[in-house]
Length: 103
Image 1 (cartoon, rainbow, N blue to C red):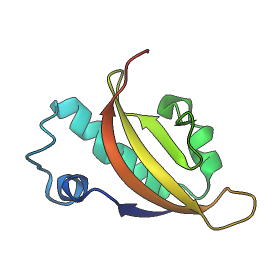
Image 2: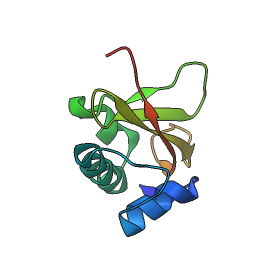
Image 3: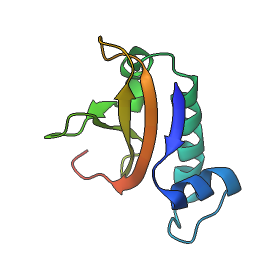
Image 4: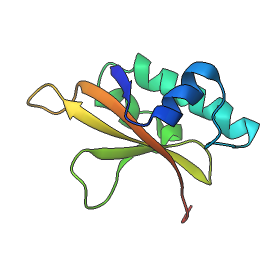
């Protein structure tokens, strides 16, 4: 699917490898790069749902906001602008790396 960054600092992190805002552990950064590549390589939302390690989920009380696991403490949040009626394919807009508690 097509990838776009809503957050300039995250785009810089992905393109340049560093960002002043995101001073994360090396393992988390490696997972971030890997997860963005997985998002780019996905053909449909089912590629994300059928990969258990991603722990793909819709964020509660939202319509098109989703997240995938980076590690136990962090998640990558993104929005999907669906381009088909079945809501399976579309453009992914990466929004934020967030702390995730409860796992």
